[in-house]
Image (cartoon, rainbow, N blue to C red; front, side):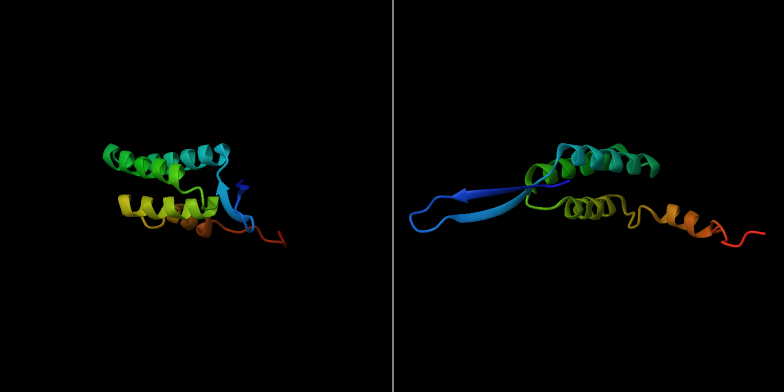
Length: 107
């Protein structure tokens, strides 16, 4: 959950405000665990893992002006670029789509 911070800059005429977002540490931990599980599930090698988590650290350290969904999008794009996997959830989607849906009128 993003935390909104408003900073004020004092000037001689009017107060200028600038809005920025700071990411909650719990969100950062959850993102880390999510991508760690994806890396494990797709058996990504050590070099690619290091490259991804280097990008993760840079993103979390510098991009506080982004909301958490925007950060997730950036991380997902980089994950796809590094691993070549464009849709990390494709297997889960296929399983879900193949599973029979319960009927409302069961015999």
